[in-house]
Image (tube, rainbow, N blue to C red; front, side, top):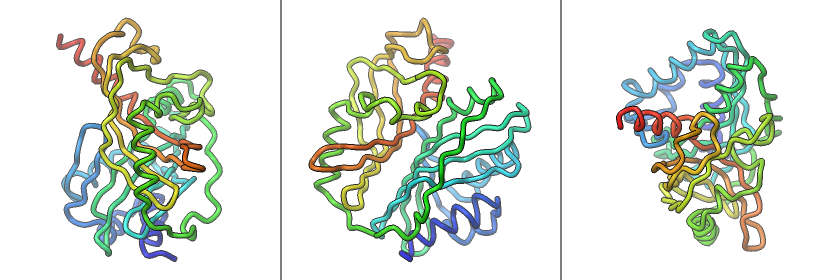
Length: 266
């Protein structure tokens, strides 16, 4: 098994699925940094553990499923679900996430991640949980392929041309299972590529898409026309020179909060 893949297996099932922080000490550097949306949280003890502990306490017994994973030996990326029972809401829920990782050859140093908290909120309020997608059969034994600059360049161009928010329905967030589609619409959108990596024809990315909010979220009715920024992490597969498959998670929940806060201050 590829050493980085084996490390992520420990991350997922020796640590995350068991809430065992002693394993986190073994697999993360002291200055481990995770990026979510516009924020960077640095320090395993100072930033990461407190955030993870809040999640574990809110969802005792929180579970974890890996649906897709790839590694080029130096970096890796994962499409996953977390699922559990909320103490506060008395409701079961499952939500997707996409994460990109770096390591130093021994321990993890960085994670760039988004999780679908917007879809999670819907489930908490309705008390109707989404199904948990089937786990991948053997994600850790998938062939390790070298990074492919050509695939990264093609996906970068596709992203900058607005491909993410134009991807087919079912590509983003909870669209395959939600009772209705709640996709952010932005006018005059400009995409900044924050991070990108590849393994062969598989590409993972983190982006920020800025523009004028034009609808899509019921909670933001009446706020159309204002400036907005949407962050996302995702997978894009390349076949025959085109992007053929996309799985991405956006920070639409946090974007909603940013817009409402700006309106309140304004």
